[in-house]
Amino acid sequence: MIEKLIEKIKATQAPIVVGLDPMLEMIPGKIKRAAFEGHGETLEGAAEAIWQFNKGIVDAVADLVPAVKPQIAMYEQFGLPGLAAFHKTVQYCKQKGLIVIGDIKRGDIGSTSAAYAAGHIGKVTVGSHVFEPFGEDFITVNPYFGIDGVKPFVEVCKENDKGLFLLVKTSNPSSGEFQDRIIDGRPLYEHIGEKVAEWGADCMSGEYSNIGAVVGATYPEMGRVLRKLMPNTFILVPGYGAQGGKGEDLAPFFHKDGLGAIVNSSRGIIAAYKQEAYKKYGEDGYGEAARCAVLAMKEDLRCALAAL
Image (cartoon, rainbow, N blue to C red; front, top):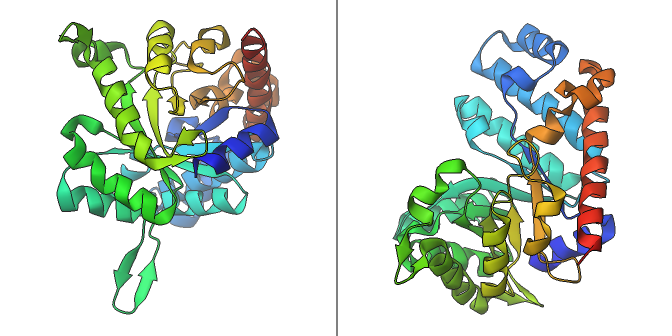
């Protein structure tokens, strides 16, 4: 699966993943009104608004980027209708030829991890029928449980040619409360990075492993260290844009050939029409504003990677 992602990155010349993390306050009034007229101010109405909003974003950017990353919490908050919107979003993105990274951040042990993995990147058998419940291509996983929690996900990846991104150094401000703790003379995130590289060595697909890592754009120097510790690990880089990450911060996450990482932007793209730079598009032009934000991000990354 990692080879498919790399092919898409090369084809689009954009190591960019669009985070589909919609909140109701982001969604233009026209879309919400139509959804509420059809379904009422209900969970179903909220889920319909999210789905229609996502569809507009995907239609606007699908030819520019290799991948999308729907964050499941933004859908789960609306219960079963929200999960139905998540499923429709995943399927629509795949129809558009996009790689889908399910940002689910699951992690447990034994049969529980296996069930999470089967539901999102694997298959389940019901009687004589086999189903692919959600069908993402990659998912994010919390490695806190160690190999007991990671191995079931890895096994499902191997069976279904899918991939993982394991949390190593996250982009949030308080991540250092645990991830930066010094253990045996080095921060915890370095130990986790080494484990990710070790686990990934058994899942190679070409030059890279199907087991990747999440390292925040807000910590470029840490990214530089982790890039060296995980030379064959593809890095998913959140934190660009709204969280403060800039193109100039991102060079350490990449190899000199411009590969090795993919950078996520969520609010900076899907809510671009609310930014001063794109206000001229208005609510009705939210998709066009998102497209322009992707093009601006692509140029920012191009300039940053040109110096490699």
